[in-house]
Length: 227
Image (cartoon, rainbow, N blue to C red; front, top):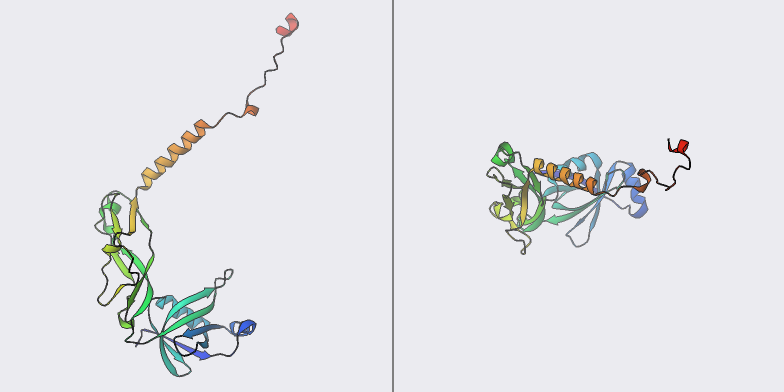
């Protein structure tokens, strides 16, 4: 049984008529994994709350007109202007089936590291999420990396620093353990470097001819003009 639950109803409206569903506060969706894709709809607010918690990595128990189906979210379409959800794609799964899911990578305890407390370095995270595979009950909500041991600006955290839970493995077989997830930089040094570059650029700018007084080469014709 999944931690998250969502009630849906079947729908017949498709194409431009889907707007009628959205006007009623419903989100159209489709679930794949059966003999045929099933067209569904669910109440907007309830759906949004479940998706915020489950994301793309946690199984959801779907109640489809009284029938139970376990699924994970495969895709969410969002209106580019309103940023509201306009369509969802679910993938049906079974409890004993190994499935793939996109899981967020979370960096913890960086504020406890010497890099942060003593040297005031800042952290850059280059990978925000990774695909893993496991049975639905074993899918992690997040993958964590402990950054408390970071000290120098040369320190890095890589894929190899992720401790996968039991029963979980990376979905990408070509993923390298050396791939960098977290690196550090010195904000003070970066600011000094930018300031020096801006100063050098300003000093090297050519003088605008319009700012130099023109010399027309004329000489005073009389002694009075000279004085």
